[in-house]
Amino acid sequence: MLKWVGLNRQKCLVKKTLKILVIDDNLLFLEVLVELLEMSGFQSIGAPTGALGLRLAENHKPDVIVCDINMPELNGFGVLKKLRENPTTANIPFIFITAQPVDKAYSLVQEMGAKGYLTKPFLPQELIEIIETITPPIR
Image (cartoon, rainbow, N blue to C red; front, top):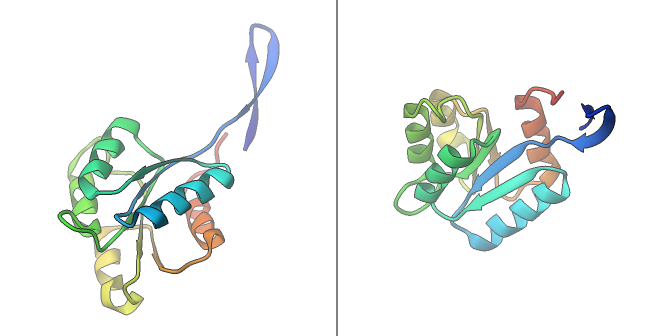
């Protein structure tokens, strides 16, 4: 989204983008997804562990978090639970991604308040559509 802003009587064209935090322990998938989001006009940050993802969420305050469910140590459900317990991160929209079939985890995803759920593999456009649906328009 492009926005004109006034600066000392001059108009500047500024591109305002959403900041997306991606958390996934599969480094290749993480790298590719971060790059795809960047190519789609989003600012993106990647974290290979749930613990690092929590720290990045608190420090960078992303507009959306995309997180794998199956990760060692702190899985996606644990990440979302901890985010919701922290007032700084409690309201950040959260999207789960996983290789698990939808029927096994979908009810838990809904219960926990995630805004979306995608099963790997998915098309980048599917993720972008969910992100655009759950975030307010940038003005």
